[in-house]
Image 1 (cartoon, rainbow, N blue to C red):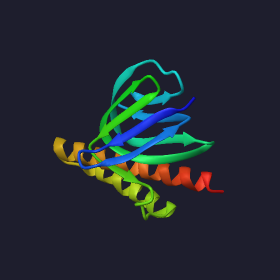
Image 2: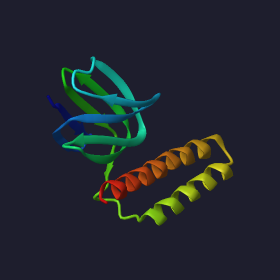
Image 3: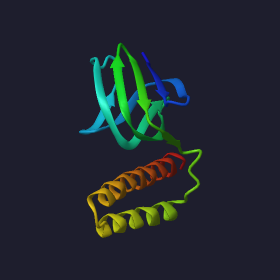
Image 4: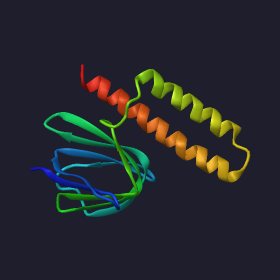
Length: 139
């Protein structure tokens, strides 16, 4: 049996597809979803969503939101997404972006600056994970 998944932003439907397995970036850690998962509503952090179909994983970068899991349906409402077809970074560029984000967090002077730089650090980390993921799966 498969899991139906829909990803929506305020502007559009990102995708409506099926999956064998899903891994969500929950606020308290990763949430794995398989066939027959118990009903759940969870908040999502900025991070990498992974969708598995036919032994192939597809990563999508989510920018916070919520997910509802109910009767083999997963509905994900997010503020924004970044699909890896849109990401033009190489592995070395993504690594450099992550290094710069770490330095920005270290150099943040105010609480607001620290929060802003921590969000950018989460995005850079997820981008690097996604690019790594794609490079490993495309061998």
